[in-house]
Image 1 (cartoon, helix red, strand yellow):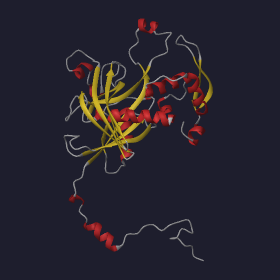
Image 2 (tube, rainbow, N blue to C red):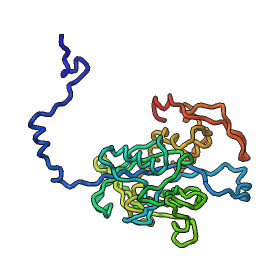
Image 3 (cartoon, rainbow, N blue to C red):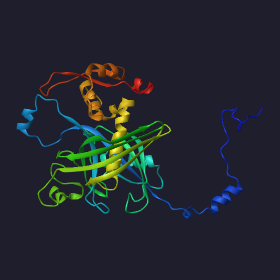
Image 4 (cartoon, rainbow, N blue to C red):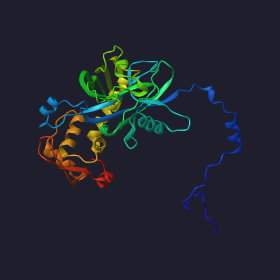
Length: 351
């Protein structure tokens, strides 16, 4: 008795076959009849790291009994060419014809950080008219999380320097109106990015960057390496009509950022905060393989920008960590147990 393939009785289905009419239609189809955008992938790479700089005996002695301060950082590259020459942007690039946009994002991330196994996920698509002076370019923005102390910063063909920047995002409500089935809330976010850490750059201790450029050349004034501060104000408009919410973001002002990347960074950080609140599993992607519970709690606090009660945090996190036999010692403070993530709990559900 023959198996029936089309009705699913055999568990298999026939592959779709084009008719002669469809093949003829496609042969005559002119894809140039419609305007086509360029497709890009930009990557908002976040990490939580301590300060990296040349050793200073006096400072090191003062900090010996302190836990090293770790901050949320984002990776930016300094553009080497036009448009926005010398301005700071998210790492990214254009899609190639033989790759999916997700593959583009992973390739760009690897080219900038030499990291292959980071958390990476689509968090926004940006196609506003005029967002790029070169033409119609749609950016697929990805959120990437990694242990930055393991990566090797590099700069691509369109960037000559890469740096980690400390991230601060301050929110202020400027308008609120609620009427029956309609609500409007407007907020302003002040985004501040600061790089004062000479070690958090792709420039080595010799001062040479990629392509042999030295710090003095990169500074432009012969004074050597310089700290960088960037700032922007982003307005958020949240409108709810008949219980359906829409959100819009616009740049009010920005300094030092390329394209609309200040807006993209703000939205990516807000996305990271929402993920930390609803599915704390992503925070583990910012941690090393082994970590203390204090380090993990501080990572959550850093992302959420709020203090957490230690007892409540440890009770909630307990199913998702496994105690190791290792201890962290030294640095002038009490030894602490090291933990790693419990993969079985992660597969069952989010935190």
